[in-house]
Length: 289
Image (cartoon, rainbow, N blue to C red; front, top):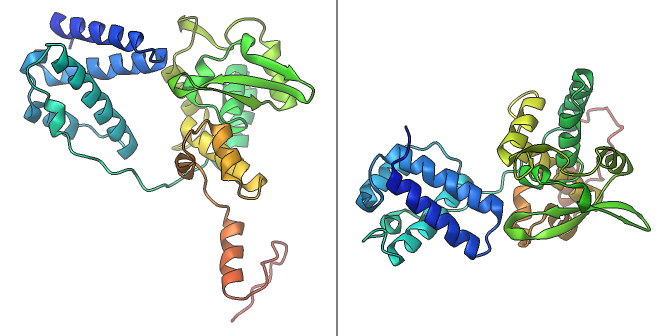
């Protein structure tokens, strides 16, 4: 269902407000898509929307907890702006319930699944998928960060090559590249790594689709980031700060959603607490206690 002209105008005006507020292009694009989706589903003029209409809309959506929290935050920000600027007399988003943050439940893509996905991409001759998978699993990039990657973001120092990653909220970070990844990205030539029609590069949504379609099972690009965070955490003997910095987290508590302690670490902790010697992973004997 197409959205009415009134909604198109208010969304355009809000997008200009976001541009003036120096919000990132990805944020502006996401807000546009979210508001257009609401406009189509809610089926009434902007100034006619009231709290019950908004609650019926959000209540019908099958969103994850974190997606719901993000959408509610976006709606609250939009309607605060709309009321302040005379587009509506009321702020229906005030009645949106508070949603508690989800309990951290990292779900990293297992190494065998990732390796099988890489082999499958090579057999298909899908170099694009191969590189995207490696950027997510081996380097922890978000789909939006993969989408905007550009040859000008490559950096070389005395230790090797790194990538200037453009993260959320216009934040940038430097992520060291493995030698193989550096060679493959440099071989792509000048310009965006993954050319497309949106500002010259693929959209984050399309990158997410490529990642999802390249992994067998119910796995996503985001869970590849979970694997990266978990692997870094294990490789650094539990250094959450390093994992969080590489993942692009300003708040290290966010990293808890990405790091799942390895089974061996959990078992060793239980053994140590009970006074047993650490388990020997090479010992296959079962000891009855």
